[in-house]
Image (cartoon, rainbow, N blue to C red; front, side, top):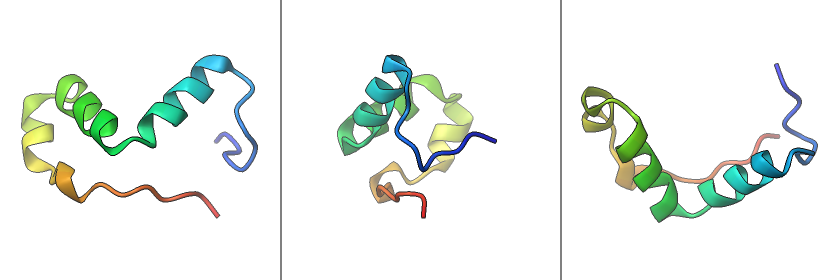
Length: 53
């Protein structure tokens, strides 16, 4: 498993992590890319950002 305590070296990882910090972007991403059956079962309004310890 990757060590998430260090900042990512890959620019694509940095971009994705930065984008997912935006609530609207994270919601839209999950609605678009998750299967409808899964995204319909999620309460995307309750998403909150949590950092690894």
